Image (cartoon, rainbow, N blue to C red; front, side):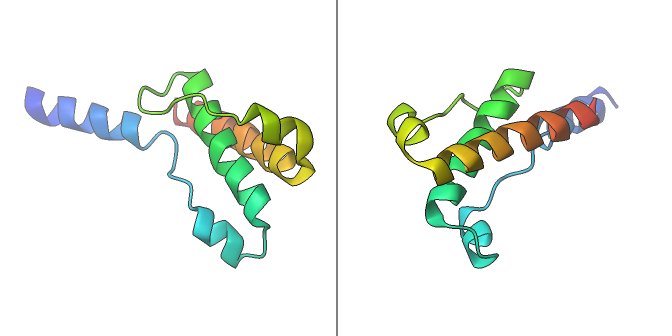
Length: 88
């Protein structure tokens, strides 16, 4: 029984932030720059809220110089924090 509870806990933590799909965003019409920023921002948001399997990621040069990357990063960061917070 304890093994089942531990397995469920690990799965719920791992699923706390849904995986991001760069190709899916591009297929929906988003620019590659936006998709890159979104994926990086999503990872950063999950990390900031405490998800153990994500790292804070932001390409500083692109963030400062590429408006699409910056917009994607901000959107991904915000959504990840909301997604993960909703799990708990």
